[in-house]
Amino acid sequence: MKILVCISHVPDTTSKINFTDNDTKFDTNGVQFVINPYDEFALTRAMWFKEKQGATITVVNVGNASTEPTLRKALAIGADNAIRVNMEAIDGFSVAQELAEVVKSGEYNLVLAGKESIDYNGGMVPGMLASILDYNFVNACIGLEVEGDKATISREIDGGKEILSCNLPLVIAGQKGLVEEKDLKIPNMRGIMMARKKPLSVIEPVSSETTTSTKSFDKPAAKSACKIVEADNVEELINLLHNEAKVI
Amino acid sequence: MSVLVFAESTSEGKFKKTSFEVTSYGKKIAEELATNLVVLSINASENEALYKYGAEKVLNVSNAELSSFNAKNYTSIIVQAAEKENAQVIIIDSNANGLYIAPMVAVNLKAGYASNVVEIPSSTAPFTVKRKAFSNKAFNNCSISTDVKIIGLAKNSYGLFENEVSGSIEDFSPVITENNLKSESIEQTTGKVTIADADIVVSGGRGLKGPENWGMIEELASILGAATACSKPVSDLGWRSHSEHVGQTGKPVAANLYIAIGISGAIQHLAGINSSKVKVVINTDPDAPFFKAADYGIVGDAFEVVPKLIEKLKEFKVNNA
Ligand SMILES: Cc1cc2nc3c(=O)[nH]c(=O)nc-3n(C[C@H](O)[C@H](O)[C@H](O)COP(=O)(O)OP(=O)(O)OC[C@H]3O[C@@H](n4cnc5c(N)ncnc54)[C@H](O)[C@@H]3O)c2cc1C
Image 1 (cartoon, rainbow over the protein chains, first blue to last red):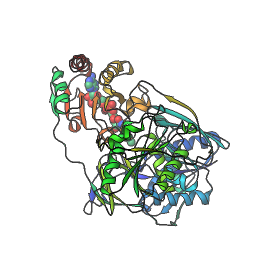
Image 2: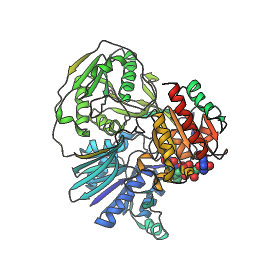
Image 3: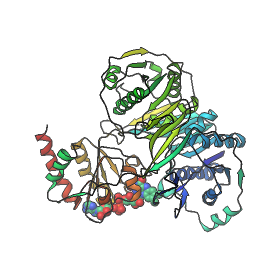
Image 4: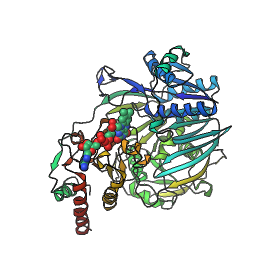
């Protein structure tokens, strides 16, 4: 099995979000970047296939050279090789288009991604990629088994889950449940040493067509202070929720 | 030209609340663009209900083969409807199925897609929308440059607006092609409010000490007609199922009221629930960060405060019934 895992390079979840250049650019000053948590679930599931069923794992990122440490981390976790498409990730469509080229030239028939990246929260790259390739696609994937050419997938639906089956080729967009939190791997020293020697190839983009562009960013309006209600006066809370906030 | 809205219904044919929200939103955009609103429904039983929110024309597909959701078929139906109606803007909700199909519809129509949109476009030329980004820590004003535009409307961001029209229903029979993506089974909790649909969410954290203490959370939720949720460690510890984990790496919550009990208010938790309109926190620690994000708070022990709240809410419900 040849698996491609799409890795987005995102600010750590504790990052303070600020903007520069008249609120048109994300301020990366002092920000730690990590593997997008949803992509980490996908990578961890790929590792399970590698260990249990003998798969090779390629990780790919569309981005500039600053994303390479994130790809190296994925190699340290256990991916076999990495590809970076040397292009600023401007919008979801342009990223999906570049990934589609990588899938075609590497003939991957199983592509694992995360359901969204925690920076732009677009939630579109995996579905667009599958559509461009005319592959099957399952979003919000919380379980994946592959036997030969057949996949069984669970996906989260509103208030439950659905079990699906389909043939490969397949793209999935994963989330927690695909693997458990305890399955996530922290790279060890040996993994980190080995990752330095694993191939990371840089390829040039084929197209720069975009469909959307960011004009500016805003921060949410400052919120008013919390009204504290005494613990022995819950009637007051009910009164405020009913008469002031009008939510009950 | 037209604005096309996809109004999703449940397997019983009833529209979801978000369907009325996307219809309200679509009506407003159609007015701004001086064009017509067309609402697409699949096996819905009460199409007339859409008139109240401004649906002049309902394009209704009834086909027993479509009784369960299939992403490829639904994508293809929306694409065919968009082509037939020469749709310029297509609006899809942010439920599980909407999020699933919108990117595929976009590629098929060569359309630009903006997800998590929270407002009416700030300008229509260039077509610019405000969307949530950085897990609710910021907004991104995004322009869509393609001829056809797809908007994924964030739940509970625009609201319902009544705008009664005398609409009409047109039957629509799109071409359905076989595909090998098959639904094998669906497990759905019935009779429980889901986090996606809920107006009110009651959420418990590690401060509740163990799964055996969730009885009062469920009781509080049931009195309020609310969904139950939890913080990440609670689901990691197996106290509650993963489907209840809310936050930056769990489900987003955009309810009218979010009640956090025994939750500290870590940045990753707040990121996921911040779009809720009103937030209440009950926590023993007055320095818990949640108090900075909440609208109302009680400093107190959940094991004392919640039973009292349940008792008083029961009285309130009787008096306000
Ligand atoms: C990459 C990453 C992603 C994450 N994503 C998420 C996410 O999506 N969602 C999420 O929730 N977390 C997430 N977290 C975890 C987050 O950082 C916090 O650890 C978590 O939210 C804490 O959960 P908690 O508030 O339930 O527990 P704690 O932080 O342990 O807080 C328990 C609270 O209960 C209070 N308490 C104790 N006893 C009582 C009592 N008797 N009555 C009332 N209050 C009481 C305490 O004062 C305390 O404030 C993420 C972390 C990382 C690193």
